[in-house]
Image (cartoon, rainbow, N blue to C red; front, side, top):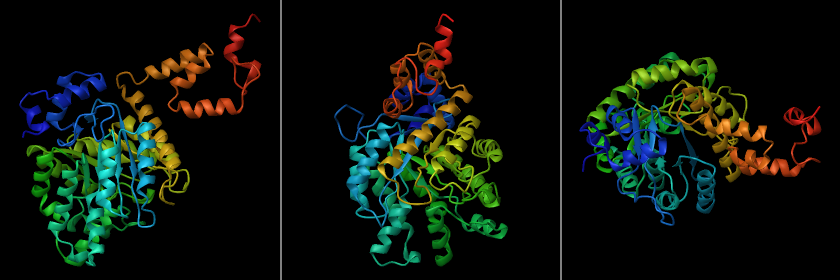
Length: 434
């Protein structure tokens, strides 16, 4: 079967492209051209059924890329210390209800196949994974040393996840013997912070062999093409602290990912690029420009970026600050960060807070980018405030539930104002006779 890229290059507007165009308020031809050029990807595994209300496992095609609304991802998944499937399904539910466009299952504890399948079955949004996590977890269960893991082990897990219906996968193809050497030669304050990147770097150190995701990249492309899943080329050398941002390791990996993205697109596979990470505010726009140039406008998926390292417990805020700047500068896809980042596995409430913070960042970026319709909701809020229409303000808010709760917990004496200004409300004064 032809992939979406192959059909787009032949001038065919596929149903998935029409669905994305309708959702984004653009023309189907705009989407087709973006898919053909590689500036837009559509995340939907071909084995996933269409979304129908009440039907489990069906999703709508999601467009990510240039000229489209900035999307956000929520990470969930078990750990070795907490493998409660029911709790992860609660997180999935609240992430979707709070407005996440995609969810990634990063499980490293319990029955990973079962957990992933339950998440896919219960999700109405695209699901992503990081297959190397499961590869290593299964190796540990089989009493294998890290260096005993084979390329077949890696690709077998990737294929299994694709067969289950995963829509996009993070693969750290740019963590190579050469890029790791260059990172080490320059020196870093915090070394590597990507779990997938660190695992592959350690595997190469022990085995003395090249990363199979790089050396056998064509094998990865073949799986991606067969299921038309999106390859999210992971930033295994992303900076984990401000001091390591935009160093040789990060930039060298980005250069390599751009080359691999070209290979994948020529072969019919959809690709996006992952990026940093921790980064000073003043470096964010330059990093977005660098990625777009080196990777020929492939959609850019960033973690945060987190703009300071000293705010554990508040990293949903540090990432929202960086995410807004990144989105305004051209980033296409933001990975949320929760208040639990760097501290613990997130709770259900943490997931909700992280999604809302990331949505605020994405929306602010879309206004700056001039995305069609982005500012209309803000204009609607201004109208509701001018009318002192409190129900209208609550329903226009990005988080109506929280807005309603705060107002109800401290109700005003006069219903047309709030307790901040009370009768001295500037809007009410302008409506009065004095």
